[in-house]
Each structure stands twice: as C-alpha cells, then as structure tokens.
Length: 196
Image (cartoon, rainbow, N blue to C red; front, side):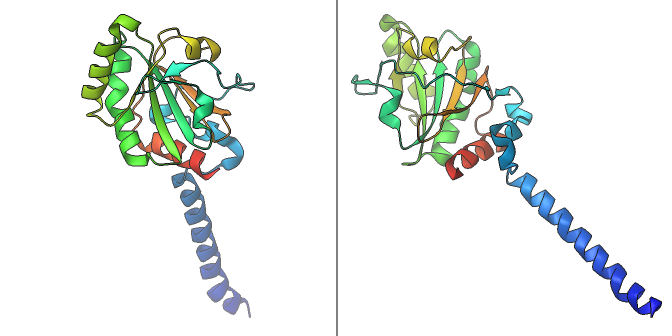
C-alpha cells in the first residue's frame, strides 16, 4: 500500500508544485498584485513611481489643445490619461519624449491618451510645438499651459512630472523625473490602469 501512495503521490505533489509556480510566475508577468495597486509597478524604469496616500484632486486649471482651444483635464474623462508636464529647457523632458510617443503609438486609443503639456512661455510656444513634433515624429499632440495652472494644482515638484489618471479623473500614480515610457514596466502599468 505504501509503495502505491509513493508511486502516485510524489508525482502528484510535483505536478501541484509546478502548477503553483506557473501560477505565481503568470501573475508576476501580468503585473498582477491588483491588491497592491499601482505600487506593484514600482520597479525597473518605474522605480521612482509614487502612489500618494491622499492624491490631490485632478487639477481644474485650463490649458490649450492643439487647435488653441481652452480645455481642462475633465474634458478627457472616460479615458485613462497619462499627463506629462514638460518644457524645452528641461533636458530630461526632452530625453524621455520619444518614449512617450512610443507609448502613445503602442497604446493610444479611445481609452488611453498621452497628454504632453508644455509649460514653456507663450513666446516660446511655436518652438515648443516644433520640438514636440520632431521628438515624437508627429505622434504626440501639442498641449500648452504657460501659466502653470496644471503643475501648481497638481502640486508638481520639478519637471518632468508624469501623472496617470483613471477614467474618472482620479490620480493612480505619478513619477517625478524622466523614465522610459515604452518600457515593459510602463506598458504593464498602463494595461493595469486600462483593465481597472
């Protein structure tokens, strides 16, 4: 009797252990850990990701869209939005812009949008627009907030700063400084936000 249990029991235990390992690895690969929220993506390129205990209310400040019309972040409700506050005089801002364009090209849809919001002065707006066009190869649209309404309301500390908002305008996470927004970690974060 003991030999029969050993003959079938040991392989069954190995099979169950293998299934458990596959399950755990699968969860990690999917960026799972939904209970941990956006904190679970704080690694690799997103090591500087911050999830605030009490994030500020989504800014109500006005800025202009590519057509020069006044808009607010509330106009993008219904979409997951990654707001990047940048300036031409900020080298890290310029450096990460192609990766934001790659993220928009990969994940951009009716459900997700990268908003590259320039905080350059009004006299520098055209230069900023041209630089964005070149850096993003025409993928990103030009939004402009020369009065710093969004950075002040969002309590931004330095540039670049990138803030992820859900469809209802709630802040999910923010990252101060530059990052590779086309990285595996960034794509996983966006996919998680889209799947909430």
